[in-house]
Image (cartoon, rainbow, N blue to C red; front, side):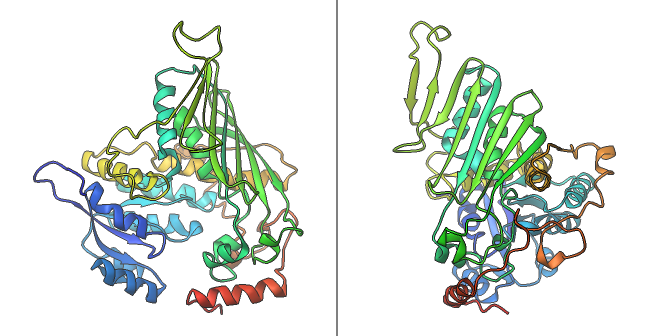
Length: 420
């Protein structure tokens, strides 16, 4: 089924970087009025296979890919490589939709904001969790004043898996999933709260549950980071937000918003897309129940969302990206909110390494603020090693066991990957 764009309006031609994760955006493109014309990946075998399936041009070289006749680029490359790719796309006069994180260092965040302002193209931060059905409904209710002013919120992204499953999606010892600190992958948990309440963090405190030597999902995996992280954010309206994410048992993603006149949260049992609203007896309207539980629906295009990944989130990121390009208006998840959400994880790691002391979150909308961070390139990336770089674990440098390395090679071989 196709998106019903206005008569005579040509589809927006896009290229997608990432033949794996990028397939979700490739396949949803026609439903949002986007036309896939090219894909790019360094894994040539997978690239050619997907390109043949979809009948589009393939590239292993990003610069050659950017020269293709297209309007916009969707970045589904590695987590820690998005900003340089986005900046190059801006320089090639392309609109950009970038998966999380928007940037891997504070210096990259500065460079990304400046490149965006210089070129004036559309930038969409493709954080899909805000667009799950219950989060969109909570945003609507919050804007309608249903629970009053935001005072406290929680976002959770808990994602445990067996070692074999994690290894299959992190091929290579230095794949980003194998070394990224536990605070960094935070946007799935903090973005929904920021989206619902339209607030941004001013300060963060990071807390880490260390690597668990008694958990085979960790010891039989080659990752060098910790079990999970908790980030406490002080928001610009005085509220407090808690983010929990990592590999704890109890898979799920949950959002809870306390206002000064009520509570909203998605349910923790049964169908998690159900929404619970609580109003105290002395504050609710006369005929309003104290507790309401119901299954919300998407605000628009509900018939197109079911085939998209992440609970419809992949459809709505593409949809809002396309609408932004058509209208010339930046999307809600613009470059600045993408940077805000991404640098929280970087700064929370600094906090965790400093006994969880508070760290200020700079606002990169302001050039005078950006100037203080333009050379801040601290990163735990093993390929960027230099003196003073932070470790991947709160315990310091970790070395996977011989058993974990042997299992990794077996799993990676099945994926067609041979580690150097």
